[in-house]
Image (cartoon, rainbow, N blue to C red; front, side):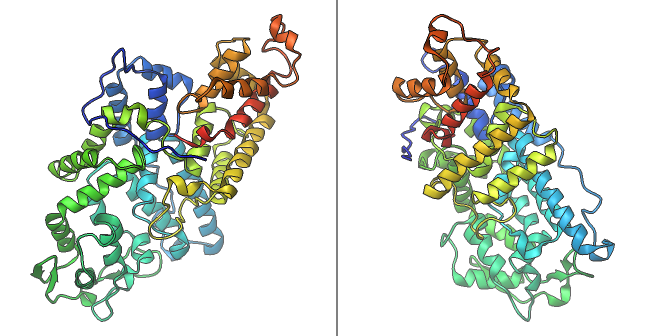
Length: 485
């Protein structure tokens, strides 16, 4: 599949619709595919009746005010609280995998951002495999996903899942461990080899000692003064008996510009394009520093901009496995075995098969995304996975497809209109040639005699209407354009 490079040169100034650059359904779909996981026609129509600035404000406010997922009874259990640890811990982890999948699908921008930061502040569940720590990790991602980045960094480093994953709990004055210090700079704030030295890492690891006390496994990991290295350290040219909070303060004081550029680049490539526009990133970074590391103002400026809504920003990013499944689900708005848990389990299973295990990124750097999702093996897997999901919907009731298509096309019986409407609904931007639409039209017509179309005999009450719709949707799955958002 050919991925076209972005030629987006639009500015960061707010997008104001005009006759030549209208606020239309393609831009609304673009907004919801990037900031959420797609939207129903009802949501799209409602957005079209507002200004783009109003829709972005609504999504940001919703992300900021939507409560975190309710705390389960076992969220802060110690090991001694379990009656049957092996059985219960496995059940609770499975429960939280399902809950996290539902959060991603249902919470729009909050779900999107929570998942984004999970792939930034990476942990791997196989390292700690403890349900309460899984919840606590997800909870901190939700809490700070649109908040203050400096606070986010400070609190994430003391999260039990992170302390276990990057060996912070082993870090003591007698045996300093460099893992977290290295990733704090390389992955979480500065970028690989960018603005720090090996000596900075070594000195920082000493300053991060002491967070290794717990009563038993599963309890909170707390600071132990006796294992802290209280001697002087020199970090980024600053010398003193630094501890954990000092490291964070020194880092953000001495390396502000690098941090801002690194994080804004990552936000840009995730939400706009893998091809970085340095001018836009520089303006985002300046605002990030000016706003004292608040994430929301930076995203607000980006999401409301001409740059974000530019034609050359649309359909430029390869969908991740979760993007693929959750967006298709939300855009259809079908039922799945009458249970959210059933769909969430299915989504997690398929995404894992396609290379994206929710709490198990491939390594400490996380999934690289975009082009890396597509190869000859995974592309076929993506097609077959969605076909399997679509047949599961069919088993629920195949008439969902007929009702969906009939409503989407305003009950049109013109195969040209039906085909183009359904194809355009699922794609980020129209197909390049009329010949592509004609192929899709032939798929939709299936075995219906041609005179049924010519004489206006065919209608949505035909028994074959639902099956014809699913055949067309399966054809859309195989379009290269369907893999993009």
